[in-house]
Length: 103
Image (cartoon, rainbow, N blue to C red):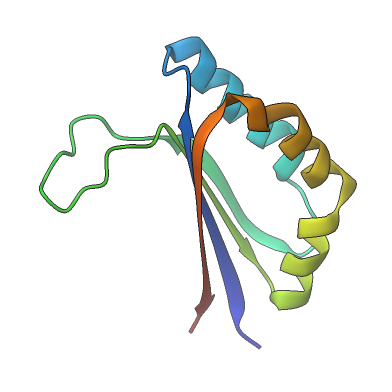
């Protein structure tokens, strides 16, 4: 059974260090420790990596690897995930989600 990688890139309306740290803390509070998670990490863009291929229009990156698709699907409807969205969506100017089956 393939693991599922769920990567989310948040662009914030307010790019202040305080706003970025608030988003990181919210991800840690609401999105870590879900059943079926085999890897969780959240952090900020590395500012000095600016090659032509680097995407630089986001502030916070979330990476969660789930044991399988079922774990991902449970996470999507979990009350903590829904609370995270409700409490934080007003701070986002853009959110991009990349889901991938891992070999």
